[in-house]
Amino acid sequence: SFSQSRYSVVQSLLRDFSSIKEEEYNEELVTEGLQLMFDILKTSKNDAVTQQLAAIFMHCYGSSPVPSIPEIRKTLPARLDPHFLNNKEMSDVTFLVEGKLFYAHKVLLVLLVTASNR
Image (cartoon, rainbow, N blue to C red; front, side, top):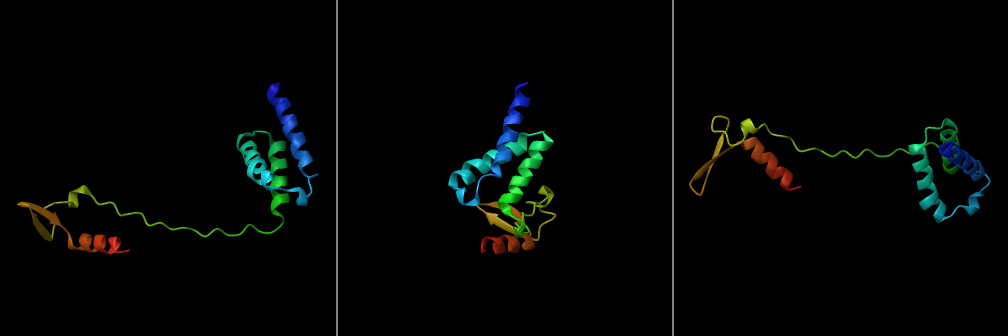
């Protein structure tokens, strides 16, 4: 079948990768070759192909441990229950704007001002 013959070609190419000397690695290998290998890894259901790709990635990376990637913590904004917004019974501050009353909370106002000053 076509897919079987395609995997045969892929396996042959992956086996040949080990014959490339490190000094022959170039920008094209990195920009196109690695992307192609990751695409093959993503779509392949063939264990032999997956194992060969793993061996190539290990060869490229070496035996050093993978460096840690610092975690980026992004604080998500707090979500307010609509029940607390512009609610006369739940407020402790009232604003009169153009003749209309708006109800608020001191704590929320402080948090908003603090966040906007960052």
